[in-house]
Structure formats: C-alpha cells, structure tokens
Image 1: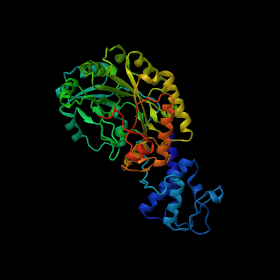
Image 2: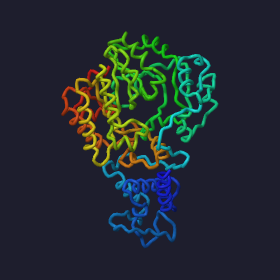
Image 3: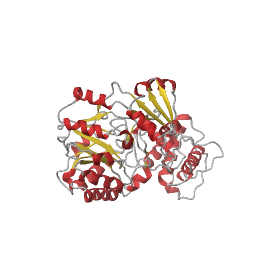
Length: 466
C-alpha cells in the first residue's frame, strides 16, 4: 500500500502540471512526465523549466518551480508537438523515434496486490458435476477441509454468470479452486508470437492459473479467470495423445500455470512420468519456479523427462517474482533432479534489462554451472521481457512500485512491448557468450524473437525445432 500511495501522489503531481490540454494530449504528456519522474526518481515538476510566460501545458498563473539547473529540464514555451518530442527523447533515449505506447495511467488502491506473504488456503472449491466423484476433487477437499465445496454444472456456465471480473478479483483468484472435466482442449502448439521464429514446442494443456505473482506474467491478460483450474480426467489427455503425437516432439506443462506448484496435491507428475515411458521418442518437460519435487524424486522414469526452471538474478526474483523460491533453492532442486537421472533445462525468460544487468546474469550462469554440468542440460532458452500493450496498465495497477517498466519498452514487430532491437541484441549477444564459455555444445534457442535478431547473432534453429 505504501507503493500505491507514493505512485498515486506522483501521478497527481504529473496531472497538476498538465491542465490546459485536451484529453488525449493531456494523457500523453501526463504519462511522459510520470514515467520520467519514476524512472529518474525525481519530482515531476523538476522536469519542466521555469517560464516567465504561462506554460502551454497549464492555464494562467501557472508556476513551474524547481531546484534543478534549467539545462536539465524541459522548456515548456514551445507548442505541444515540440514538448512531446522533447519528453519522448528523454524517456526513450535509445528507442526514439520508435512507436511508443502511452495509455492512460489507472492506479487504484483496490487493484494493488499484497506481496508481503503467500497464505494459500482457498475459500471455495468449485467442482463440476461430472468431476464430483474424482480422486482429484477428494484430494483438494481433504487438503483444505475448511474450504466450502460447491458443485457447479460446468465452468463455462459459471463464467457466464460471473462476468465482468476486475483486477481486484484477479488478485483474489487463489481463493477459488475449480475441478473440471476436460473434453477437448488437451494439446496445442505453443502460441508463438507473429513473425517470430517458433521453437516447435507443444503444450500439454493441464491446468490454468498460478499461485505465484510475477509482475511480468502474461496470465494477467486473463483477468476474467475466476480461480485456479485443474482438470480431474488426466486419463483422457493420455487417450487423446495418440492422435496428437509427433515423433521426436517436445511437449510439456507450465505454459498456463506452474507445473509443480501443487503437485503434492494434484500428483499430476506421477501418471505423466509413467505414461511417457511408453513414448521414449518424446521429451516431456515440467516447467516451474517451484521446488515441489518430492514425487519426481521417487518416480521411476525412462530418461525422457526434463525438469525446467525459470532463472533470474535474486534481485529480479525479489522485486518481481513474488512468493517464488529463491535462485539458490531452484538450483538445489535442479541438482537433486539431475542426481535422480532427469535432464534439466533452464529458461532465462524474461531477461530483464537494468543497470548492471550483465554482471548479475553472469553470476546466475556461473551458479548454474557450478551446480549442474553442461551434459545434464537438455536445452536453454533466452527471451527478453515482452508483453501485450494492455498488460502495461495491469502491471501498474497491481504493482504500482514496480521497476520493471522503467526501462525503454516500445511497440515492436509483433505489436508487443519490448526493449528496442539494440538492447535486445546486446542482451542476447552477452548471454550467449556467457553460456558458451561453459560449453560450446549447449542447445540454446531464442524464445519468440524475430528472424532479423537470429541473423544478426548468426544463430540457426537447432534439432530441438520440430
């Protein structure tokens, strides 16, 4: 709540500096003043230089006082286009004149997420009538005996009756568990962004929603999600896999949830490992930030199971990956899985750009190879921070004190907000050098990146792409 109050005050000051312009122009200048103020950690009024005449941003009698030297401030005696251009150059020094996204800032105390402590105990367990007698439903009821159990006809009907969910409702999604009976949405190709080189990954579409709260998570787009959703009929997934299977494919869970966060209750990992003993030409991946690996360690597998962790510097984990295990805990869990015969994979996704980023990511990579040998790594992906434009407002609303939006993010080839090409190329080039220093044979690919970046880095799709 302290972050909300601070950013709300910053926004109010920015708005007060812009009172004379019409709605759209006022919105753009207000946002630029707000973002510059937040990024540079200065007061919004410090950005504008004093003027003996009324500013075109304000009405008669307006005053712009600032203790900073005038040379560090924007002169406001010009017209709107000139002022906007000056502010854009200051806000996006490397990206200007790229296409930027300047939506209205929506801060609301009810939308701010409490990131102090995760106390997971759902208040309600909704069970579809067709899944009421399932083992999964019984496990959840037994694990949370104080939760109210509610039978519903179907999740689809429930959503029809509960439309118009807000960000505040999304923050409360962990209060509700939905046990469903899946009939058709079993597998899909990874929804690679348009114009990007795909990695050929396939999704075992098991569960939706996450316990963890990462500031950058694209699941925030789905603010209509009423809770955490778990299908009870995993056997039907297995029956349909025979129709979907591609020889040599990579498939896994963790795209729309965390693969292992509640595995002690769902026990999904056990039948999955057992099933894929029959499909040794397929590599199955559990993608996670969790350290909930007890079932994996006691299972007998066929060597085609990969356990993957998302890795970031501890600073980024502390500031952006709330309620998740530490970097050290993740690497220790990976070490245990490798000792149990599993291959590990690592996803540096998203790589977050900040002052001193290279030094911090080098520490992570060195820690990784101090813990796991290159021969035990199945693959490594690298992807830079990116998200759909509307997620920007959601991040601001849920995490008003965030730092992740302070760097330059512009609309790029797929209409997603990304770092400009020069920054992305710098990140990939450095990351590849740091990784290949440990082994030239590491199977590395870029996640959701366009072909021009691949060409600049002289990368080619590997045998992982099927």
